[in-house]
Length: 195
Length: 84
Image 1 (tube, rainbow over the protein chains, first blue to last red):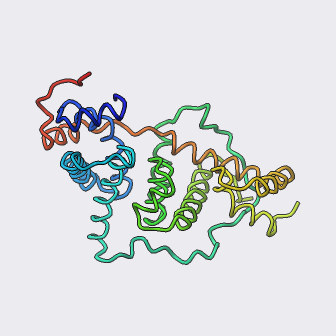
Image 2: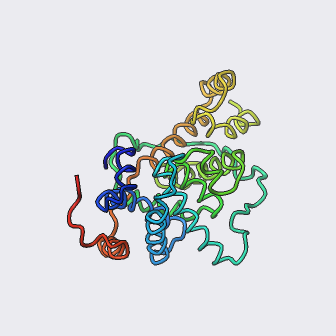
Image 3: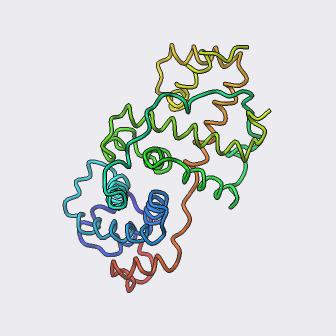
């Protein structure tokens, strides 16, 4: 895709090819985010469509204070959150169990992984293990992890999007990472902590 | 080698440590501990690998039928191929 200032200028001028470039560039990530949040392909597709309709309608008022991608992820996240709220009929989705530290414990021996993500390719099997592990996270931890580590939003942006303090974002991110590390260790270092 | 509070304190700081959010004094304390603790070293290494895995995992292309329906809703289906 072209540079963001250029694409924004073309978007504001109503160039439909510029909008298609944006859709092509961001739709795979938006769909993945919605699917990871909602765990339902039909609802994820609805969110995908709603997101880009909102992007199209909102382009005239987009001031560019945040990056285009951050703005689009925020729209997709809010659309997904509305669906989660509708499912639950209350706001309990972001309430975590008390953080008593019980999920933060070193259980020796901690085995290193023989597999190095910087040297080896991601196989379909590994991606499945990664997706399943994310699916096991509680919603409150999953949303923070997806926005911060998968989509690359800053801590402040995640806090703003989810209505959390930055300290809460950091705490949840840490717990999510430790949980995922533990799950992936079952795959990459199956003997860890079980001797 | 101790696996008591010191390891637990290290563990609580590991995300901030790998994100380079800690002040230098605390980083130095952690690194001194890591030098003598293989379990915490393995924990740091595998936590880093976990984050790297997810950060560098590119999304799949949209399923063709999902993309086609998206184009249709957005009225992009008659625009032809990608522009310059």
